[in-house]
Image 1 (cartoon, rainbow, N blue to C red):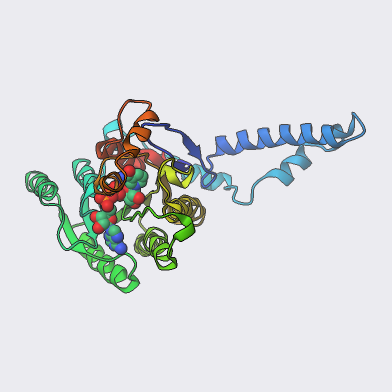
Image 2 (cartoon, rainbow, N blue to C red; image 1 turned 45 degrees about the vertical axis):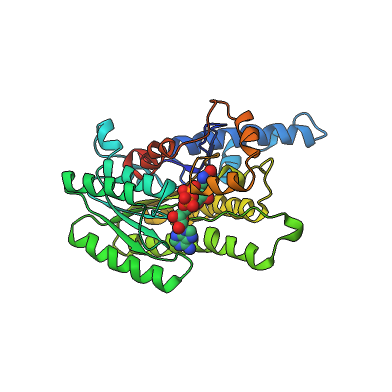
Length: 336
Ligand SMILES: NC(=O)c1ccc[n+]([C@@H]2O[C@H](COP(=O)([O-])OP(=O)(O)OC[C@H]3O[C@@H](n4cnc5c(N)ncnc54)[C@H](O)[C@@H]3O)[C@@H](O)[C@H]2O)c1
C-alpha cells in the first residue's frame, strides 16, 4: 500500500513527505536495515568499548526493532495485487462516489469536476446555497454526456447532525446506483488576516472550528460509512503550505495553526484507519488564485509582488494544478 501520509504540492516548492502509516514488506525491511545500522552506529558512539556493538546479536536486534504494526507474512501476501491493471485503470475513479466539501466554488468545485472526468460520481457539499453557476453548468454537462451523477447539497461541516444526515442520505443513493462512497476530498476552509496580538478569541475559534473540527467531522462520518459497508477508500485533506511555514507579508496565525492541525490529523487518521482499508493523505497547496486569495489581495494588494518573488515557476498556483494529485490519491493507483 502507498504510504503517503502528507503530500505537499505547490508550484513554489513541491516536496513529498512519506508517512509511516502503511509499510510494505520491502519498506519494512529497508526500515529495519536502516534502524539496525543506526543502532549499531549509536551503540558504537555511546560505548567506551569498541567491541560493544558486536555483543548484541542481529536476531535480538531484529526482534526488538520490528514495529508494532508489522504485518504477518499472510497479510502481506493477501495484500498483493491480484492482477496488473493498466495505467488508465490506476487513475480511474469508476464505480465509486466521492464526496467533496467546499465544492460550491474555487478549488473544491474544480476537484469535483476532476472526479467526474476520472469516471466517478460526485457529491458536492458546501455552506453556500448554490454552487458557482459557470462551473456547475460545466459539471452538469459532463454528467449528462457521460451518465455520471453529480449532486449539490447545502451542508455546514461544523454541524455534526447535518453532516451525518446528509452523508447517510447520499450514501444510500450511491449504493442504489452501485457506486458506493469510496472517497472524500475535504476542501472546505476559511481564512482570515488579523494581527495575532489583536486576534478576537471568537474569530480564532471559528477558524479552528471550520478548518479542523469541521474537516474531522466529515472525515469521521465518511470513514464510518466506508467501514460499515466494508468498502476500501481514500480521504484527501486540502491542507496548505501554511501548515508548515509562516507566510511572509500576511498575518494569519489562526489559519496557519489550523492547517498544521489538518496535516497532523491526516497522519493520525492514516495510522488508525489503514486497518479498514482507508488511506488518508493531505495536499498542501501554495498560493492559488481563488476567491480566498482575491479577498487577501483586495485587503493588501502589495503582497502579490512578495508572493511572485517566491514563485519559482513565475506564476501563482492554479486550481487546475491540483486535479491530477487529488485524483491520483483517490484512485487505486496510489495503493498498489
Ligand atoms: N487559495 C489558496 O491560495 C489556498 C492555498 C492553500 C490551501 N487552500 C485551501 O484550499 C481550500 C479551498 O480554498 P479556496 O481557495 O477554493 O477558497 P474558497 O473560499 O473559494 O472555497 C472554500 C469553500 O469552502 C466553503 N466553506 C466554508 N465554510 C464552510 C462550512 N462551514 N461548511 C461547508 N463549506 C464551507 C466556502 O463556502 C467555499 O465554497 C481551503 O481549505 C483552503 O484553505 C487554499
